[in-house]
Image 1 (cartoon, rainbow, N blue to C red):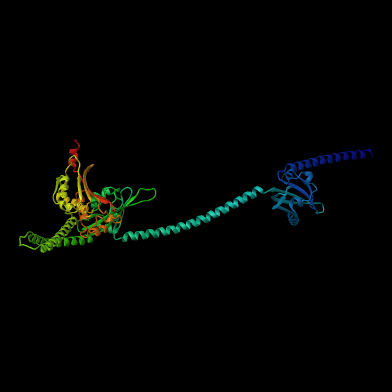
Image 2 (image 1 turned 30 degrees about the vertical axis):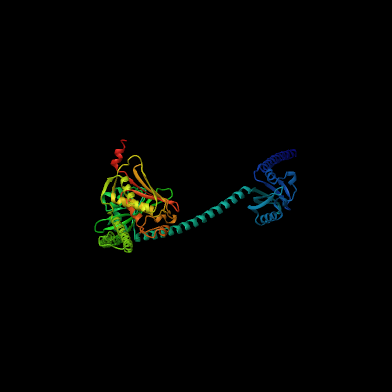
Length: 533
């Protein structure tokens, strides 16, 4: 019996030892669970079957703003919201658990925080629901990133739309540019004037069909070549010589082409400016061959008519002169007056014929016949002396102011220069009121001899000054003062002076007078001679 009790005692001890070990293991597991629950970085809470918070971890405290003693026993609706909690628990009951469900919690300060929640049911032995285990993590940063991503996506979409629109606009602009290019090419190809373009490196970059025809060349043979090479090997040589330096502008300069296609071209150059680049040069070639033929025919007609008229007018002049001198018998005073007026009219006709002949010579380029080295002072004095009678008649005071030192000689056609100075002086005397003053100045200015004729006459109207050197032009106030005149004198004078490589200009003010200037170059040999002084 005692052995039985002894065995029972031993078994009891063993069972108690096993129970003790189990209790220790259970305590250790509970401690581990508590530690894990406390140090878990995700907020976690246990709530009862009726929605009361039973336990939370420190991470839950931190995100909610509640202390443990404030949150335990509180309704979970305060944290998850009534409707939010209801949906979470209902879905968890239906599915057994929830994973990554978006929801919202409210902090102690009632700040809304977006979360991703997971819910697991806690069940008793009879499978009845005894509570809920809820874990979640803060989606605030994710939402911010998502919102930024959406904004960026919208920006990208907007950029994509803008890029598509830009591409469409570019395509449309390209189409318009191609259309304009085609139109421009058609205009250039069909332009009646010849066109050439020289690039910034002085290469021929474009030539149109009309210019090809003018010079009998092909585009492929000349485009892309420097004009320095073309001048020695192509029919473009006369044009290239006329163009000279690219910086020199040309306006309506004439170019004669010899050969089977003899033509006269009018050459004009225009700079083509592009932003940030050196200008290119557009050369425009206008065919004036027909105009030159018509002009030559007109000149020949005027010359022929003038010559034909001058012979009978000269005969009339000498006949009238003989009558006035009494070579054909005595005449009465009344007859003398009539013959004198006829003689003066005949003289004006002869003067007009001479002017017309001078114009034909100018247009034919034959204005100078006998260029010699002469003193301009002597020529001017001769012209002044020829106006003595007219000066006395109009009671005009005339002065000739010349330098003390002797001026160098100039190379001139004496007869023609006399005509030029005479035309200036005649105008000054004719349009200066009786008792006025005319002054002739002569001086040297650098490498030129300058002569000027100053008057105190009616002056030239400002709006008419641009036309003063054109053919047949007379100022309105001049016509009112002196009805006679051909309007050719200043035109002839200007062309005579320019034929001597000189220049002419004027200054004028209405009612105060006019000053006409002419300047003639001093020949090179005189410049060298004068360097020694």
